Length: 319
Image 1 (cartoon, one colour):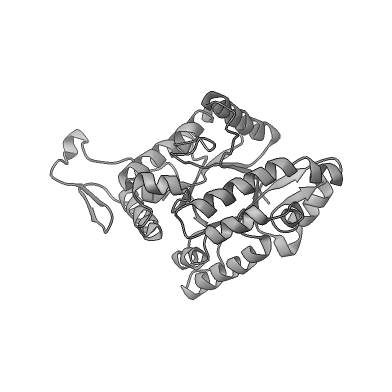
Image 2 (spheres, one colour):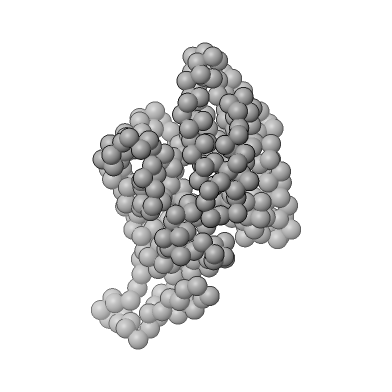
């Protein structure tokens, strides 16, 4: 089992941007010192409490300061990005990190970002698939490029000058490209990712551990039905807290966890997405329910027993 940290990150409104960025940098450096394997960072353009607008840019500052960490985007919200820009930026980071990079992608999850980028009413799942498909085509080919699509078109033909090196876009360090993992947040997404034959992210936030087990089943079933070998690759993002005693592990994270869930609940309940029911449930949830279905808290021994239990044995990323 690999140990990683996923961070949105989520802060309090009391902090200024510089304080938040400094805290996020120190958290990543601590992960490296402690020997964590992976560090996954989210991105949002329009959230004061989740202030990382460009995960690749932020993580580039960590490259010369870390030795162990493999960096992952958690995630690149592809409907909000022009495919050639994604291809070029990811290729650059992959070279700068000497391949210490995992490419997490998703359709987006913040209503204010949807409004900002004009994607609220658009088929973001389709946009995500088209974007990553174009990125792969760019990496797999040389100019002239001509990739027409439903949402974007990529073309360099008339201005291509091979003798001057004008036109080619960079290819990644890892061949054929960095490992990809897709975030799934709705019941419809899990089989979609399985049919595509891509590794998947599952997050214990608005969905219980028990429900995620059913979702994993639909992912595996779709994977096999599409004829892909094996059964797929699942990474589970689950809140983990370890303390010296069981009581401390219960009490110490309570305020932070409930604030986190209520913040998400309020956003979903009052937002423009179709997930108001999920939001209302999070606003009503008790801490006892959280401990049972949404988190893994306890002593080191208790957390190890639960995460290594065969019933829960997936690739887990704690935060």
